[in-house]
Image (cartoon, rainbow, N blue to C red; front, side, top):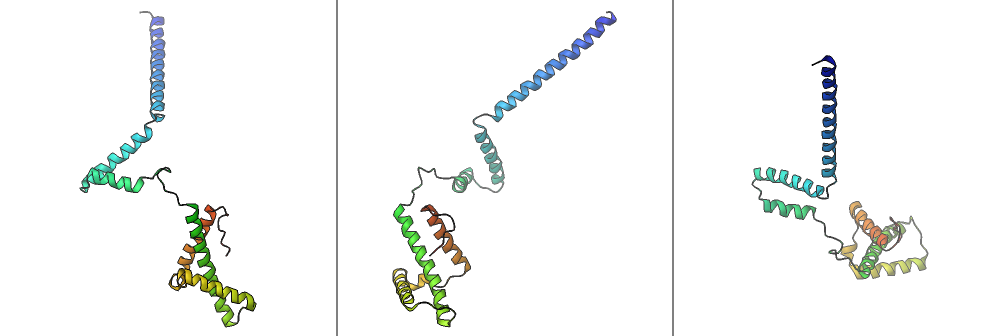
Length: 176
């Protein structure tokens, strides 16, 4: 073989290797992209996670049934069709209850300030407030209206705010 033919083979061989190497890389790229965009990718990922969990749980003698039941309890979310929504009347009734309880708590605070002389209230308004407090005590019972700690006040305020938000008010609407 002559030198020019050997040189041509070297160049041609390099070109063929580069071509097929590039083609192979492009094929792998397309395959990876196809797998990544596969509609069942999420199912495959979940299956991989469950398999890993299953292997770990077998070490602790937890059966696949126990693992599945645990997964369902912990991760399942009912679709909106399955959720039984509260009625408007239930929401408004609960909002009325938490409004009354918040008002009562604030009233009791004002009452202690009035009795200590730190605050003054017009006698007519005060008599109406006392009547309203008695009415709330009759409806919910004094034991349900006891003085609350900070956590209980927070829960009461959060419930009232959430119920008002569902009813169309802005968040944190806590006026009584």
